[in-house]
Image (cartoon, rainbow over the protein chains, first blue to last red):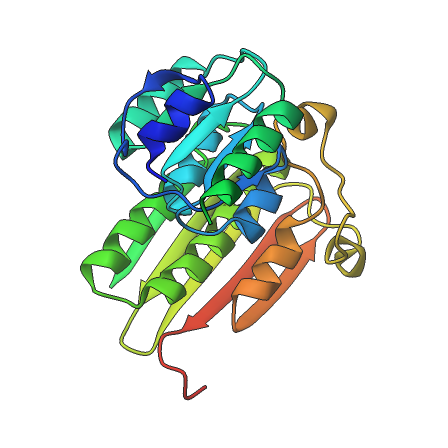
Length: 112
Length: 140
């Protein structure tokens, strides 16, 4: 499913628009950065409540096209700047991690 | 080819710069993507370790046809018990570091898993030296 469709169906707001045409089949949810470094796979979108610059750095290093910040979190200025320069999409969700993950899981698996 | 980076302890904003540069360089050199991923994970974790625990550090990355060798030498408190530090889940990180989502005790295990050679030596009150090698061909 295209990232743009996920944005629309999950009612996410776009904080930095990038990779909207990317095909997304999977996601990784974690607030532990080493866990993401160790286990996330390229092409997944990352769901987290972390908002500092290292989030954008890890997304870029791991080739994750988008980060969804849950619970109405806002990225720090340097995270946003880094995401812009590295071409990482930053999305905001008003809902919490559990709701976002549950809805996304259903969405991605309803396609199959 | 040799790349050198300085790391400032406590400066999380700069963490990841070295890994990001090395990733770009390896891509330009057309290194296999799976290798790049391993190298970048290991180097990023090493950078975070210096930022989270040490006063300052120098990273030296040497790239040749056979391998990527990364030396991370820091000045800092050193590691009291390396065996413990290598255990998944063991960490001495501060609360502030943990709140950022680091300090889960996965850094050194992640490095171990993603490198072909990992040597770590440390002198208390002086600093820690970490050597990591990832071979670029699979004959090793």
